[in-house]
Image 1 (cartoon, helix red, strand yellow):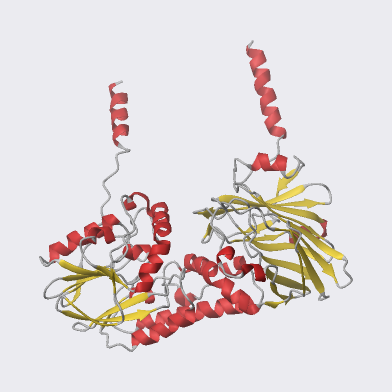
Image 2: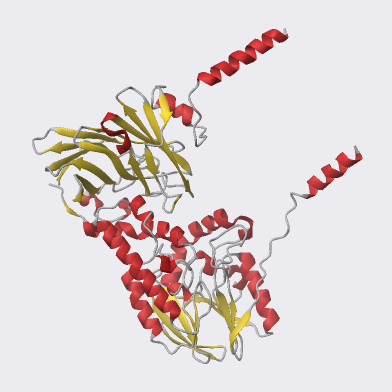
Length: 309
Length: 248
C-alpha cells in the first residue's frame, strides 16, 4: 500500500511541465555584431519556433536589434541576452519582413522604436493575427502571451545612421513583397533576411514571383559584403548561399513550369523527385508541398487558354 | 443466468463479425456517411482506389484532391467523393461513360483535418472505398471569399481557361472556371455554386456527368481524362440557372 501511494505521488508530479525557456547564446561574428542562430528545422513544440537567425549590432551609443524572433518569450530572452553582452540600451529594432518567426518577439521591445518597410507593416496588419494563431497551433505553449505589435517607424532604402553605426538599407521584394536587407558598413556583415536561406529550403507564401527573387539576389550579391547572415541557416564568408539559392530557385521555377505545360495536377507535382544535389538542404519536400500550393496556380494559368464560348 | 449472459455475449460478437471491415482511418463519421451517402450498400476498402492529397493543407480553401480508380477499369459505374468531417461533406458525384477515364483531380475546402474518401461503385453493386487523410489548420469553409474581394468578378463569371494535354492513348482535360462557389456558410452570402457539369462529344452526346457540391473550392479547378483525341465540350450550370460552355 505504501508503495502504491509512492507511485501515485510520483505520477502526480509528472504533469508539471518544466518551464519553457530558450537558451539563446549570442555569438560575435564581427566587431560589435552578434548573431543568435536558430536551427534549420521546422516549427515544432520542441524548439519553440527558434528556427530563425536574429542579431544585434552594438553601436557607440546603443544597440540595434535585427528581428525579434517567434514569440514574446523569445523576445524577452533575446533582450536578456543582449544585456549580458552590453550595458548600452536598445535604441532601435529593425524588422526584415513580416513573417511570424521574425516579428512576434516585438512585445519585448515595446518601449523602443520598431522600424520596418511600409509594406512590411501593412502585411503584418493584414496577416499578423492569423499567422500568430497558426504559430500557437504549431509550437504551443511557447507562444503564451504573444500578440502582434506593429512597427511604429517606417524606414526607406538608403543609409541609416543609428547609434553611431552606419547601416545601408535595401528594399527588396522576392520573399514577401517587402523585404529589408541590412548591410553594416563598418563590418561588412550583410543581414539578408529571408532573401537568403542557406542549407534550409526557402519558403514562398507571399512571394510575388521567383523571377523577382532572382533579381534581388543579384542586387544583394553586388554589395560590398564580407560576411553573410541568411534568415535561416549558417553564416557564410563566401558566395555559396547565393549560388545555392539561384540553383534551387531555378530548379523550382523550371519544375513548376514544366509540370504546368505537361498538364500535371498539384498532387502529381508535390511528388516530383528532388535532385540529389539538394540532399543537404533541410525540409525540401515539406517546402515543395507548400510552394506548389502558393505558386503553382500562376504557372497553371499561364499554361491554359480561354476555352469558353 | 450465466448461460444467458454467455449467449448474449455470443450474439454480440456474432453481430460485430458480420459487420464490414473496419475503417482504416477509424473515422467517427464513416458509418454515418456509409448510411447517408452510400445507402448502407455493401462496400470494401480497396487500395486500387487511389486518393491523393497533400499530408497537410497549406491553404484550407484550396486543397488538391486527386482520385484515380483506373485500376477498376470499365467496371466503374459512379464515384462519390466526400470529406468525412466537413460541414458540407460531399465533393462530387462522377458518372464516367465508356469514353471517359475514372479519374478526377479537383480542389476543395476543408474546415478541419479530415479523411477524404472516394467511393467507387462497380457493376456488381459493391462500393470500393479509397481514403486519405489531410491535416489542416482548417477554416476553409467559412473563410471570406477571395473571388468576391476582386473587383469585376461578376463580369468574369463562367469564364473558363483550359487545355488538352496528350497522355498516351488518352488526353487530359484541365480547366478552371471563374465562379465564387458560395457555400452558404459565409455570413450574408447565400449558396451560389456550380452544381452540374457534363462532358459532351461534338454531336452533343453526353460522355460523362459530374455533380458538384459547394465543398469544391472557389474558381473550380478540374482535371479529367478522355479516351482518344475527339473534340470534347464541357457544359456547366450553377444553382441560379446560369449555363456556361467550353470546348477542348
